[in-house]
Image (cartoon, rainbow, N blue to C red; front, top):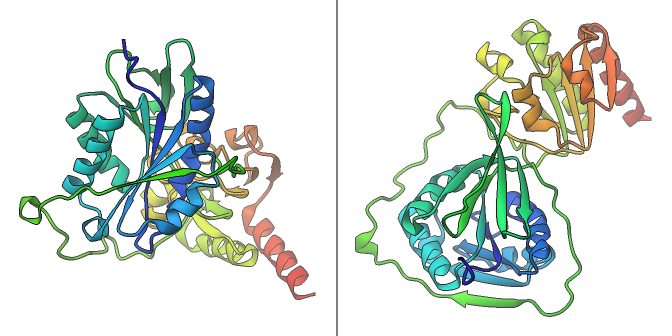
Length: 336
């Protein structure tokens, strides 16, 4: 039925400096597995003002080809301009499936592409699999407030589209087997047809930028901290470890810390080397955002807290006694 639709495409976002954003490189890992399962190619689509650095990074992640669209009008993200370019590429190459990062940009772009191509879109996926016989992607995402996981398919339309949360998959470098073809496309969009433009950037809550998705060590605090001032204990430990401060939704809702630090279903999905959960019970919504961490350490006064079910190491006790002692030992070891 869809014999003309072939290959797995991954949209790789590019930042202002022309570097590939982490989420695009992460998505090349599951996309490569799915493409291999159906003996098709993995193709990266790179769109931005300047893409040379991004292209070099993408070459290390198992792609068969790279298609680029670049130019001054792609320097700043614009829904109309990007949608036009990506849909033209999709109509020409007819991919079987396309993966997009569930970033602010991807969440805006995905529905527009789906509507233009008259296909379905599964948003905020946390797991992917391929039915090799049907060449059909199963997109898995949290549903009903994270209380269950839904498996969604798109059997009647192509391409199959989905946005995937950052931090769910790991970047895996693959040694290129030969020269990787880079196809450069020039796609113009008349300035007079652009109906929106960026006039000014305004910081919504005045909080600083927090790079949870790129952090290697995250120290997170939850309701178990008791009050806002105890987040200083989290900050001290994070500084000692060279890590980033995270939080549960409960701490954000209590007004103890800004949303930019939130990890979980309604926050950021992360996959650091070390995740330390302090005073966090381990609700399924929080676990959905950090369970792919390499090593999880939990500190909680409740020995029956669900967080211990996913933790590699657990400490039961009073965090106000444990954290200062732990931070002091780390700082003492660093100074020796």
